[in-house]
Length: 215
Ligand SMILES: Cc1cc2nc3c(=O)[nH]c(=O)nc-3n(C[C@H](O)[C@H](O)[C@H](O)COP(=O)(O)O)c2cc1C
Image (cartoon, rainbow, N blue to C red; front, side, top):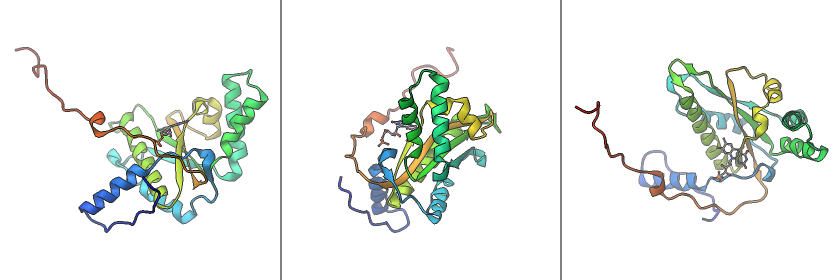
């Protein structure tokens, strides 16, 4: 697959549109945050990224997820959170290990924390549906970012489970910090990885038991 730009298709359902969509979707790949540099998306582009996110399926329109921006000016503070989270789980962490943890907060011009409302049940919409809604939103954003010429990545890490991060982001007991989303200009492209083939993703259900028990 080369890196030639794709021409936007005409709106509407047509073979060319489907081909274009598949080509576009299959071109997305993670670009490590350390390879995402300035410039990042502009304010107007961020509006469009969020508009793409809002197109995610959302049972009951609960809006069960949100993004929290970590602006560049707040990255040192996030680095402190990462270092403290490391010390919480490993009091013997060396200065060098803490510096490595801090460094992760400095990567990529756009860094958002994705948070999902993980209350056990909200208006009969279980957590699994809310997590999938969040996943669809973040995928919409990454595909849109690619259309704008940016690369993106999702990262999580053990700091997401830390008390210090929950406190720093003022998360409630209901909030589940799911991952960070990084977006920026790709400074070093990567070769595409092999993807699963359709047969690996699909099977046909064959009922094997009588429905309703043995008669
Ligand atoms: C929610 C989520 C969190 C992730 N966190 C990490 C992470 O912390 N570190 C990492 O190396 N990869 C992480 N990954 C995997 C990468 O984001 C990426 O999906 C994977 O390397 C496959 O690359 P691809 O997107 O090009 O297929 C995460 C993926 C997801 C979906």
